[in-house]
Image (cartoon, one colour):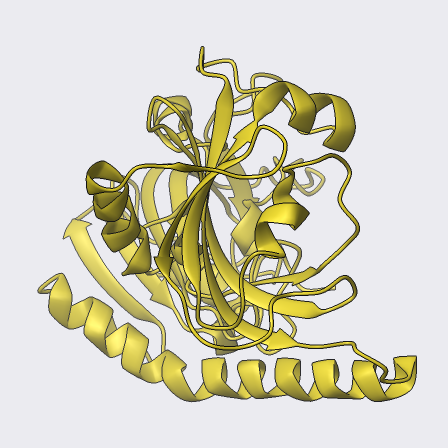
Length: 317
């Protein structure tokens, strides 16, 4: 992975002086035109503090980021950094934190005393705007994005298989394609349709990137995930009534009180080709869950009020 290799390079190369207060190291320099204002860019990016604390990493999502090159907000900003690169290049840049905050409204991390934000970029694809009309340029971009979605679709099954093999898992597979591994057997009856299941959960991608959890300690360990305004507590969700994505809904019906289980949910049982705000198209999801209680409705009682479903498990709209 470039992220690891690039960081190794930074330990043995010296940063050079760029424009403004920028500093940079070029790891790989391919032939080709440099990025211009208006160009479309597909890239991977790792953002760190000078103390080496990772704030974001596009490799966690197993997909590139998509960016339109813009006019610089200040000398030596992110767009000035990208303008030094061409397709296939990789580099690490130190960019002034105070300027990022003042000119680009980028919050200064609370856990840094450094002067710079550190970005490592790997440029996967550049579509030049040049003299193309807006419609022709957008057509090229749309064609590329369509191909990226098709690639994600074709690779999904293999990624799930490799994840299972790499973690030495032996899942049970349901007729729909839901994979599950019972890590601790529960006791008692399984929920009936309409029962409320009280549980703790953690949702992640196959890369291990956690995108949602009901457990505060887990959220605090994941860069950028913890929300001090959120009440971290077990979720209550009705079983079998399609209140969540199909794979999550199906999985709830398999569990009794005390069960601990890992679900590997293919995108066909999650967000499919559309994805969601934080879930890319054709992205399989992993949920680790512990059932704390199964609550039967009281005769004549209204439907239970439930906590919001996890980000990756909310029903499609």
